[in-house]
Length: 212
Image 1 (cartoon, rainbow, N blue to C red):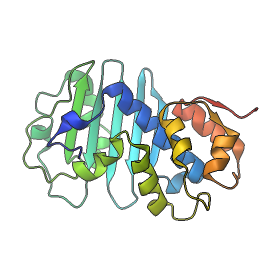
Image 2: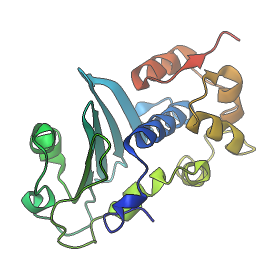
Image 3: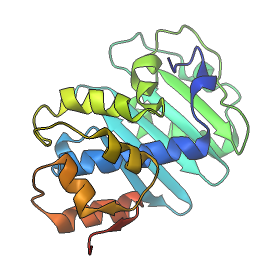
């Protein structure tokens, strides 16, 4: 399992970014109402920075910043004991200081923090204990499409095709294949607003072709 106990199990920065985009695309297909999505991605966060967000509506939240020179994960599990943020961010590179200590993270909170600079391995500050929610929140990044399918089948209940969420389509999205109408309609029986999905895909920065 991926956690602060074994951060080396996390995929590298580029693969992590692809997974973040993929599961955000899948959420955008299954739930066109942004309020009920679990995962979202903003490729236009700021100049040269993109951000992935996980939120469950119950207080847990995760933000991942993808910058030119690195990547950082801030996780918050509202059910675990409060952590010393200064220790969690010990030796944090300067390029991540503003992200970690300004809004919105200063209001969200931090129970774990993991970062990577360019091609270096994932790094941590001073770990106080491993009861930090990281195993539960990071599990989705195991690079296995079935992990998303199992989670979404339970979370979205019957918002998808009655035959279930097809592994083949999810695998194509994990592989970054251009999204087509056929792929969308293999996941949901119908889509209420194709233009909204296009706008979501542009925001995510994911390729699509709905003209075929």
